[in-house]
Image 1: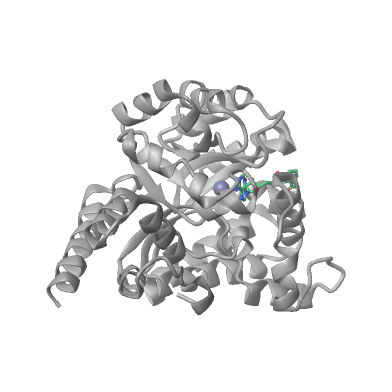
Image 2 (image 1 turned 180 degrees about the vertical axis):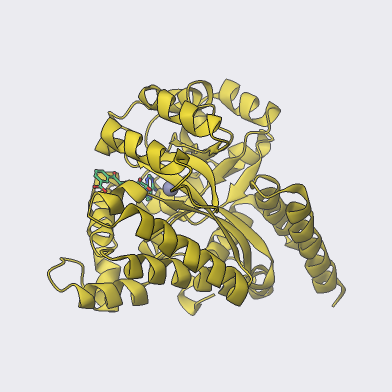
Length: 353
Ligand SMILES: Nc1ncnc2c1ncn2[C@@H]1O[C@H](CCC(=O)c2cccc(C(=O)O)c2)[C@@H](O)[C@H]1O
Ligand SMILES: [Zn+2]
């Protein structure tokens, strides 16, 4: 963990425990994971972009006034990804950053529409992510899987294109496991995307839309009933609806919680007001994720430290949280058992030393 991300309210040895803890990450965006080094490199390569190439200036550039501003900035970084080689480099470097944090398995959310509409050839795009996935697994031991998401605000044209890319047997990449929906929620009702989710689900993909990040609990209900969500991206506003919390707990529908993201996009005012405690108290399966870590000045380890502070967790509690991520993943049973066992062994050794 980089020094600036050490939470002074979390004991140092807990930070060290987190740094070595094997983890699964279920909610993290491809372009949103570009480290300052990658962004600077791409910005220097494409000087017509408004993204600063100086990493120091990036800190200011990545300070957001609201969710709409965040999406504007996000799209300016999307504009830096122009060739299949940019895509391959980004994906491979993201996996390297994950491996450094002991991430054993990650479902990376990719928005292929944003790349194909900017002129990257669809076949070359798929080859680039698959090449990087295989190299990352062989070289870093981190297993990557893909979630293709619809950028909802871009309209039904983007939904059609994303569903096509995710279900066409000649294009669909081997690593694809799920189908999502992202971007702003205000004015972008979930039910209109039902036909596209139906197609993706029929093709064997899991349903993982964002919902309740920037709008109320009805959006989460819509994601569940219309899009047949198996997990919810964020789901922050579920805390306003006790019936919804009970439903999520009873059906074991996990929430992909990303605490620092919610503060950075101003979806939640302060970390102390974050509803993660209510989720946990209601028995909801909480998973910890980083969303767009460099843009939010965080990483997955820091999100675990934040969760430890907000939920008052010790090593065993953190290990359980990491196991929630494994349980909620779309890994097969032996894959889940392998990482869960690794978490148990790591924790037992740590506590015995
Ligand atoms: N916290 C987040 N919550 C929600 N989404 C998040 C979050 N972080 C990252 N995203 C990503 O932002 C994309 C948004 C892209 C988008 O809105 C858009 C609109 C119009 C045109 C185009 C284009 O490409 O031409 C794109 C989403 O698809 C999603 O993958
Ligand atoms: Zn997200």
